[in-house]
Image (cartoon, rainbow, N blue to C red; front, side):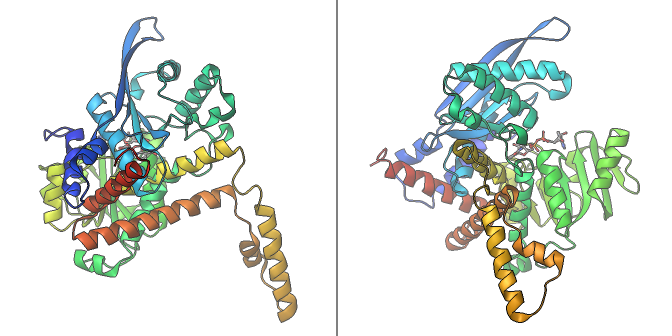
Length: 469
Ligand code: NAD
């Protein structure tokens, strides 16, 4: 974090900025803003060398206006209660913006994954899950974790296994966590979902001619130069899909430093170089940059911070060259920096919208687990046969035959992955259209518009449930 106010305070400042454009009573706004509960825990870990260490961890549930609550678990050495509460708060607003019927939550375990062995991480994860289960902070209808910084499918499978061994209701236990491996109740497309959502959101933003003209840019992704900070789950997939969409990667930042090459680098070459040398540095033809923060101010069209919060502050905001910033990470721009960038006319696509692809596909995974059936299982063959019959009828009426490849593309019934990706695309496009419409109506930036949208939706949930008069 920067030396500005705390992450949670910044999120709340953004909330208050947006709340001024709504007419909800102050009491309701306060109820929406507050974090409902935090379970802070400390538990012992026996390290591989036999020594005992105490691990600090948290789970925050921000809002119960919809259940279950939902949010990732972060493993990081600098995670703290304020950060977990801030991230849980963002989750509530994020779910509302993409119409996913969950309240917000977030977990944090104060460990650096690089300093623990796999078996130590497994013991930590299982004990953390045990603590959550004992305190009723996990369950398919209670609170459903997912991956975040420092965690992935492996940790989710340990969580599921531990929860399974403790629960008395095994029928829906698979839905206690999302982001699981595909063979263990996970869903195809979840791993890529956040990065793919970042791509859909940026593509959508770049499709409006008047918005791009204001930035001095042409519409479309083709040829736009991007810098990505963090090549983890979100950053790697965002870079991959943006590159496939026509963008050129000119800069990449990781924890060991950054590289910049004005005429572009291929993502897979960077990944192969890092796998071979252990670092992104010294990439052929690129300039090494000492810290990943420094690459943020290099020349590009689109900047995608996808590592951690507090990366663009009042100090470096005046030097940012990008005309568009797509917030892959949560909270990468501090409140002070946000204003500086807006004053400079930068288009900021905010985290509470842009990285919502992960929770959207987690919602699909949760639905699949509760329905106990793979999406597409009932209709795929039926669709294929219907389309085949239709095409056959057209061919016999016209006397013409379609090439095999084209025929295959037309008759192909939707697989689970097709449905997941199309549901994600629909969600991201719809949410962008709605956020942009509010931004124009209220004459505000996209972040404020997204907050207004979230506040209105959460407020109406409270009112419709009779919780608020
Ligand atoms: P991850 O652990 O998969 O990747 C993070 C990457 O950032 C790692 O490669 C790490 O080495 C790198 N990194 C660490 N310190 C860095 C630094 N100082 N500069 C540059 N890179 C650095 O995590 P992730 O899941 O990709 O999460 C990244 C961000 O996206 C977080 O803010 C997270 O909250 C947010 N997010 C993640 C998801 C998800 O589905 N995983 C969903 C929404 C938001």
